[in-house]
Image 1: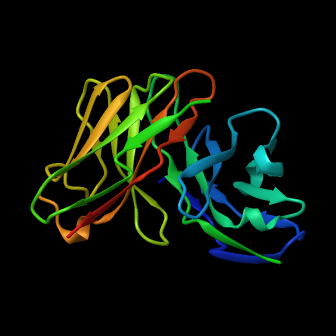
Image 2: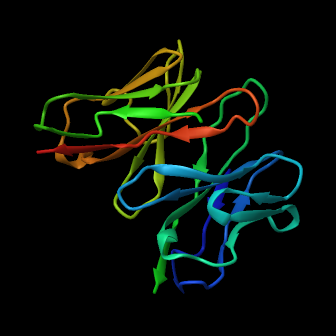
Length: 116
Length: 116
């Protein structure tokens, strides 16, 4: 069965600290991976996505993620967090081939708290 | 960029009545839209996959007679919660898959439903 797991439910960092949020997936075949962010009271926004090619993906707001096939991981990173990065982060995966529709499977989310 | 809009953003209805939530892709055509439900401090739960011109595909445990989904055009899907009860109160989110390069999924802003 397809699954996406995020093991860190709540991460607390000081401002300027480096961030890494874990995401592991379980899929057969080609997988498309995403990181979404949800700021308090707002809707989900796409941070970055991986479909193929360079396994190091750069997204918006200084975020990046690395697809490591051997580890079934797609961890989100940011060298230096800002207080405005406090939000809930969701990893999601989907596997779809041409012409077929597949839904995204979401991880349980990681709440990021940034201390001044 | 691709925009998905939901309406209404907040709705309060009386127990036993029905309420409709609309999901529109504003600048692209979406043959497939998805409806999610998000409980407080929980991840998104996929309810159903909405396909334009055909019946929606419901996830296990989701009552299709209670949550009616209609995907009447390439830019509009609607979710109708029939005979609403207080336990149906939740945050409902739609997303639309943009065909073409990437098949990226974009999310609506979400709709808060409160049943009193």
